[in-house]
Image (cartoon, rainbow, N blue to C red; front, side, top):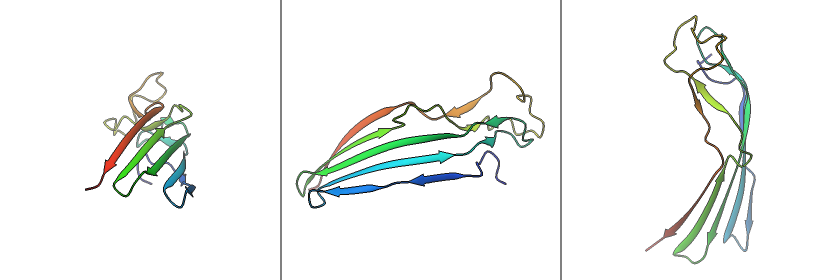
Length: 116
């Protein structure tokens, strides 16, 4: 098994085209099962899920608007533990605090695409 990789990771992305394909809306659902942070399998990173959404609106053949929302449920999730721990018996085992890489909280962004 690859270190710090969950046994189960799944993504489901249903989408909907509206207004003769000028508008595209997608919902992205992701799940990551629990996994271990270290090679000694002593520190468990809990499972988590993410909900993201995006919308593309083609205003004209030259202009498209995009809107993105990530981690809409503001889920707390850790993508991996301390990549520098690398020991078979980690000093972080059983510790209340440890280093990890988090998923970012709820964010929104927008973009405009101009084609010439």
